[in-house]
Image (cartoon, rainbow, N blue to C red; front, side, top):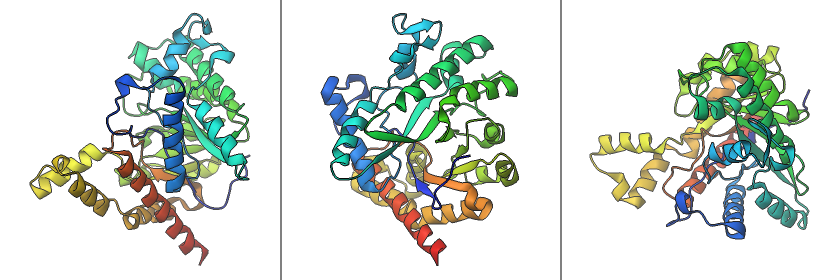
Length: 339
């Protein structure tokens, strides 16, 4: 059993906007790319994120499937070689962690890997080749195992990202098959928190029973009723916890509603766009969401932060403000709990 810290921990899901004028189709290479990654992690830390995730500037399927499907880097179909299960972005964590050690600090990070069901859907859709699913799960486990070897940073949280689970009709595996795949994927997570990041709460209770997984991520900012679909007693029975989403990240939908209400196009007015978004997504609003999650789950809430990644946001500046608002909301909530 993992010994938890008493306070709710602020983490983020991962993706982050690129600097202005840069495109995901033409990312820099080599050291220039790693510097881009390092800078984004620094921005997250400065905003108050306590378990920052490397920024997912690359495609979440391709970055894992490329080595998994490469005959030179795999030992059998869909099983990546252990020595090839490296996440490039973690080199930036190593560099930053080394710098922080000189100041007497330790970089404690959240490392995410695209889950076996998500990877399977990207290649095989609505089929049920269980052997391939389990092979992909083994590859996910190898990426996590390799990540734990970092010398200058600590993997404090591992995340298995399964956004389609509970949403996509193409998932036709039964519950036992899904549970087994997730258990294989989470097998390196002994003595660290392991989260499954979901976009739907429908599979939350199944995931909470999976050995190795002990944190269920729920997107509860955009969809507050999602929390009510998770049974606290089930979490308690499995000694599992909730990661509560307290900041909306679906900015396209958010701004579309604002445009309808205001009769304008905020995308053409960047300054006003920022004002309106953060009037709606203020630290006070986020703190209320966190308080509601705590009302429902009490100390079963262990992590909080934005619903999902911020990669679709207009700028790094706006993404950083969103994170800073989350930090402020969590700090206010903690201070009230201490009274």
